[in-house]
Image (cartoon, rainbow, N blue to C red; front, side, top):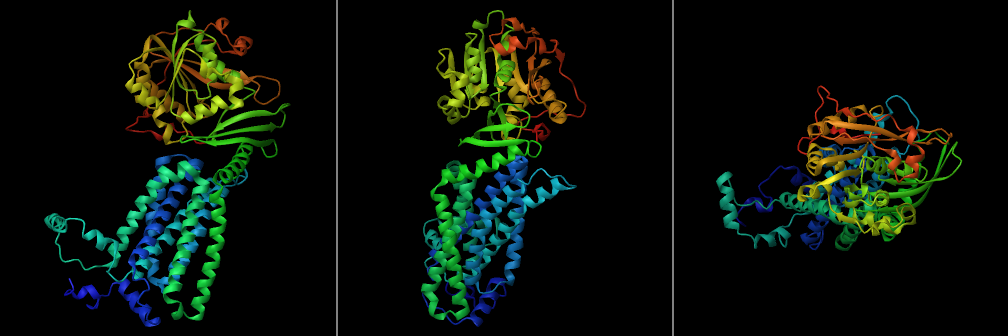
Length: 599
C-alpha cells in the first residue's frame, strides 16, 4: 500500500477536496504535528453532527404531522427535501475555504437554526385566524423552510470534515479493518465489481461515519429522545449537542494550533466560543428541566390553538394539566365561551376535543345507553369496548350489569384516568367493576388473536386524523369486528357527519360495506352546545349490522340524559349502506388517505 502513489496524494489528482487542501496549505502556515492527526476525534465529531442533523429533520416531520396530518406524506416530503438540500449544501461547500473556521461556524449556525426552525414551525402555524388569498399554501411552504436551512448547513459538514481528515493512521475504520475478513469481503465484491487496492480516501471514511451517525440519530430519537422528552425539549437537546461540538472543536483547534492563528482568526474563534457558551448555557437549562419546559411551551400553544377555533375574543382557555404518553398527549383545561353562563372543563387528546363536562353525558348516552336498550336482558350482554380509556363508558355499562372486555393500547392513559379527579368524577371508579376485564393491547392485534364473540362492540376510538389511526378505519379492522359478533350482534361507533366531511364519509361507508356490513341505524344526540338554551345536534352515531335490525327502546335506558331527551331522537330507521361510484375503501395494505380528516 505504501507503493501506491495515491496514498500520499502525489499523483496530482484534481478532485475538489484535494484542490481545497492545496489552497488551504498555500494560505496557512504548517500546523503542529498534533493538529487533527488523531482522526478518532475528527470522526467522532462527524458522528455527532450527523446524529443531530437527521434528528432535527425527524422533529420537523413530527411537527408537520401535528399541524398538517398525513404521517407518511410529511415524513416522505421532509426526508426528500433534506436529501435535496444536503446536495445543495455539498455543492455550495466548494466555495468555502478555511475548513476549521467554517466548520466551527456551521456548528454554531446549526445550534441556532435547529431549535429556531422548530419554534418557527410552531409560530407560523399559530398565526391568528386571519384569512387572505393563498394563506394555506403560504403557511405550508414556510413551514418547510427550516428543513432546507438545516439540510444545506448539514451539507457543508462532510466536505469540510473531509478536508480536515488527511492522515490515515489511527483511524476508526483502520482499526475495524483488522477485525473483518478482508480477503472474503474483497472476494465477494470482486464477483460484482472491478476491485483494486484501496486508495485510502478520507471522503469514504467520513461518509461512512456520517451514515453511522444518521442511523444512531434515527434510532435514539425514536426510542429515547422523543418518548422521554417530547418534541420541544428534544430539539433543544440536539441544539445543545451541536453547541458542545462547536466548543469542543474550538478548544481542540486552539490547543493544537493557537500559535499559528492570525489575529482575525483568533478573534473569530473567541466569538464562536462566546456564542457557543451562551447557547450551551441556555439549552442546558432547558434540557435540565424537561417536564417544566415541555409543559409550559405546549400548553401555551394549545391554549392559543383552542382559542383560535372560535371567533376572535369569544374564548378564554386556561390549561389545568398536560400529560404525554407513548401514544398521545392529554390536555385538560377550562374554557369560558361568550354566551355561555358557566365555565366548562374539557379534555383534548392530541389535537381533538374528547369531551367537556357540559356534554359528557350526551356523548356516552349515545355511545352506550342507546344501543344497550335494544337488548331485552342487558345484564346478559357481552360487550367489547375498544378504547374508552377514560372508563366513562365502562361506568355506563356497569349500570346495566353487562360483562365488559375492554381493549386499549394506551396503558399510561388508563392509569391517568384512574388517578385524576376530572375522570373519577365521571367514571366513579369503574375500573374496579367486577365484570370488567381490561387488556392493554392494540385492538387490531387483539381481534386477530381472540376467538371470543360479543353481542355488542362499542368503538370509543380516536378520529381519523393521521396515518396512525388508519387501521381503525380499514376493511381489515371492520371485517374482524364482524367476525367477532354473535349472530344478533351489533357494532356501534361515533362518526363524522357527512355534511362537514363528505369525502371521509364516502370512504368510511365504502370501507364498512366492503367489510360485510350492509345496514346502519344513524342517530344524533342533542345538547345545548352554544349556550343559548336551545338543543342542537351534537355527536353522530351509527349502529352497524349484517343481520338483525332491532330498534332502541329508550324507556329501558339507565341514563337520565337519554330518558330526559328521548323525544329529541330521530325516528328510528335502518338504512342500507350507500354505494359510491369511484370511491375506494381504505385498507391496511392499500390505504385511501381520503379517509383522513383534516381540519
